[in-house]
Image 1 (tube, rainbow, N blue to C red):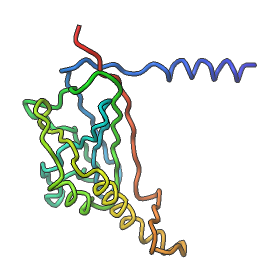
Image 2 (image 1 turned 135 degrees about the vertical axis):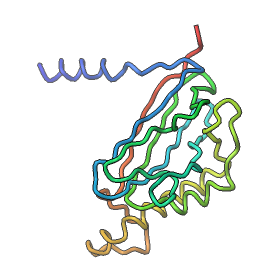
Image 3 (image 1 turned 90 degrees about the vertical axis):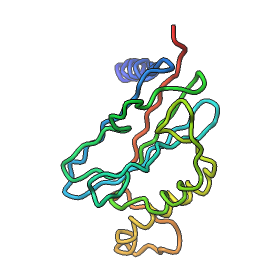
Length: 180
């Protein structure tokens, strides 16, 4: 009986989504507590079905590689630009995925280079014009980062093998509501 009550309380707590009004600013702070660089890429899916990506062209100190957090460092995404990243787009649910890896997202960045369209009201955010190519590039990057673990485990590298010890994702869901 108490397990059921606990489950119901947890369900009620999880059912409450964060609501953000159109035009408010959103920012994620990412921390790297490891002894090597961690690379990341940020995607969002809005209620209109658009796949968006945080513009990864900003370089930083880790070997001038975009989307990297130095060992022991932290990073605000998007950075502290004057225009920031404002919540825009249609009213409804938005899901943001931040994908982390021990290896750079070289193939992903190459796929993104020619396949983005600027979103006028959210400058660091771009609409993906080639989502399938980008998804494949992300898988290829994660597979490349996982090669050592796959080979050590005796798994064929002819197919995608993703070692969960070298990559991770975080998912954030929020609801966009109208300004009151």
